[in-house]
Image (cartoon, rainbow, N blue to C red; front, side, top):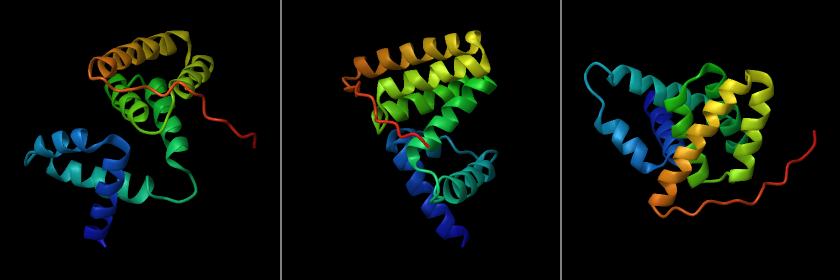
Length: 140
């Protein structure tokens, strides 16, 4: 089961974060970090991110909100970049940041907007097109 979870996790990690990031993270793995990387892939990506009851969009929203709440700015940037390159629109992400301003505070949201602006500039410099059309939200 461990190899199956690892393979399933690596597939999901690549889908969410992109091959370039995963290749860099894998190449940077050392004897010191090998067990931690294995844990992330098997447990985080293989067990949790592949569960069927939440979609990738919902999981991305939760992760971005959590990273803002905890002030984990490097991880936020990683997930902002991945979201903008994959499924989420800029409108969706701006809504997440506004929501977090209420629950995490204006300073945290302000910092998140600075990081979003930096990621947008990086993606523009790379020639990455940004989806600016909002996703239609559904009421529960």
